Each structure stands twice: as structure tokens, then as C-alpha cells.
Image (spheres, rainbow, N blue to C red):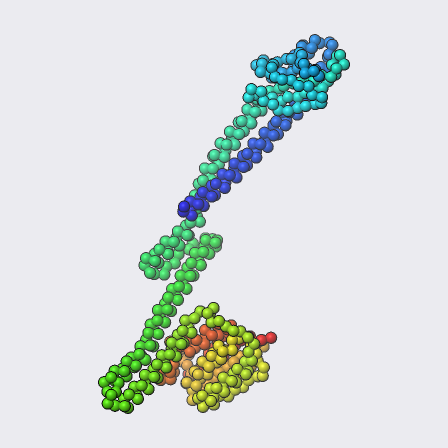
Length: 450
């Protein structure tokens, strides 16, 4: 069953049940009030009749007495303690009450009874008769008029309920259309996307900011993200293919050179093997960086712990100083600590130091200091710098500034992208400031461990 039909069915059904319950409650409430009122009225009339009869006993004959005080539509009789009745008076058309069984009651008794499908009030009141015995004055009075009125009420409520279901049915259909409109639009847009392969949006009317509008807005935002990620993926694949094509071409060329001339020329073999080995290393490094960048934040498996940033930076600087034979000056405040993954933070610092070494010939300055409730790691070089127009793009994957990011220096344009990923995963901020011909300053900001 379609969702619109379910909404229509459920809303109509709920309203129909609600109307039915209300109608039943109204009918039974009014019915009880009517019967209670008729019975109370019959009790009062019978009590009044009994009082009048007692004052007239002996003056008016018994049958005339009952006929004078009997009901207009019913029956009246005197019932003795031995279940005998005398002086029974019946109104015209009530012969069915002649043969009804009559019982003696020691106290007042009142109830609603049915005789041959006709409804009566029955009231029995004890009274003292002329001979000193206790008898019952029993009066039956038809209340068919009230019953007819209740039947009219019942039919009226049924008709009102049926008529009320018509707008309920229509409103349920309209409600289904209102709810299903954006959903149908979204479904149609999805089918268009599946058919055409294009990223489309749902047209939204900003008349109200209800949940349906928010759902459509979320869908459009999701489409924008998917389109952006798809474009980045295409660019990433294209750039990766381009970067891998160069070392593969070099390896293939040197392999063919060995096949042609390697058997007779050991120098060619040595040169080719060295070149192939070098390109293989570059391909491995590129592949490792690509695999790291392909990870999502939740896949990094961080091992957060208290890390002494001062010691970590000094250790990293010492390692680069020994490996490259470059002058690296460290200025660090003591006992700067943070909650971080030590290995990934060291990798982040390595990336910044590696860039500083590649693109500058002079000394590199590294500092660690506290700034209020944050710590700052700074790596500064006095190298060639980055042009102002290129600075916002250096964190893009495979982006290289023409004057700086050359393959001769070994860069693929992935280092800073990876650095940004690492900093975001650990909740740190990385910032790059540079001036062409002056140098570059890279900063990592983090929360101090308290």
C-alpha cells in the first residue's frame, strides 16, 4: 500500500472511530438521563396518587378510585400480600398489561421494564388499606414517547457521523497530498539522478520552515556534498594517475634500455637499476600518502594520551638535524603538554620540517610556547616562500606552487593535505603564513593538557 493511501486510511479511520465513540457516549449519556428522569417522574406521580387515594378511600369505590387516579397510558392495580390484585385499571390499548405477573414488595420499588416490545416505568409503593392491611399500589406507565425520541437521537447521531466523515475523508486525502508532495518531488529527483547521472536539487518553496522543508533542504545539502565529493574524487583520481604515470614511464624506459643494451654495458645496468630503485621508492611514498589521505577521520584509530610536546619537538628536530645535517634551532618552553597521538603528531611535525628543509637553504627555527589556554608549535624558514595567490590552495591535494613544488625536490603536493588531515583528526589547527622571497611560517595550535 502506498504511503499516501496509508495516511489517508489511518487519518480517516482514527477520525471515524473518534466520531463513533463520541456519538455512543452522547447517546448513552442522554439515554440514561432520559430513563432516570422518567423513572423519577413516575415515582413522584405514584407517591402523589397513593396519598390522594388514602384520603379518598371509603368515599369513592375502589375501581372508581383507581380509574380516577390511574395513568393515562398504562395500568394501575392494588396488590395484596398474598399476590392477589384487585381494582386493576387499564388505559385504552394496554391490554397486554392485564395478564402480567404481579408481585408484592415490602418496600418502594421502581424500574424500567419491557412488555411485548413496549417500554414502561413500573413503580410499587406500599400503603395501608381500609382493613388495616398493607397493600401495594403498582403503576405501569408507557414511556414510548421518550423511547421514540431516543431513537430519533440515535438516527440523528448516525447521520451526523456519516456526514462528518465526508470532510474527514476529503481532508485525509488533502493531508496525504500535502505530506507526499515533497516526498514525491524527492523521489522524482532521485529517479532523474539515477537516470541522467546528474546531481539535481529539489525546488523548495520558502513559505514555511516545517519538517518537510527541512527534509528537502537536507536532501539538497546532501546532493551538494555528494557533487563536491564526486568532483574531488574525479580530480583526485586524475591527479593520482598523472603522478603515477611519470615513475612508471621512467621504470618502463629503463627496463627497455636494460633489455637492449644491458647485457653488453654494465654501466647502463647500474644506471637503470638505480633509476628504477629511486622511482620505486617515490612510488611507494606516494602510495602511502594516498592511502593515508583516503582514510576517513574515524578510521585513524587515534591513541590519545598525555604527550610532552616540548620533548617531542626537540626529539623530532634532533632527528632531522642528524639526517640532513641542517641547522635547526629550537626554542621551547618547558613542560608544554597536550592530549594527542604522539606518533601522528610527530608525523605532522615531520611534514612541516621536511617542507622547510626542501624549500630553504638557511637555518630553520622551531619554537614551542604557551598562549593563554593553547599551545603553539611554529616551524619557520627563510626560503623562497609562497606567492600570495597560491597560499590558499597549498592544502589542496597535488597542488604545487610552480617555483617551489617541483619533482626534483621530491614533492607530490600531498604533504600539506596530509598535515591538515592529521591536525583535524587530533582536534588541532594548522596555519600557514608566507611571503614570496621572505620565507614561510607554519603553526600548529592545540589545547593545553590541564
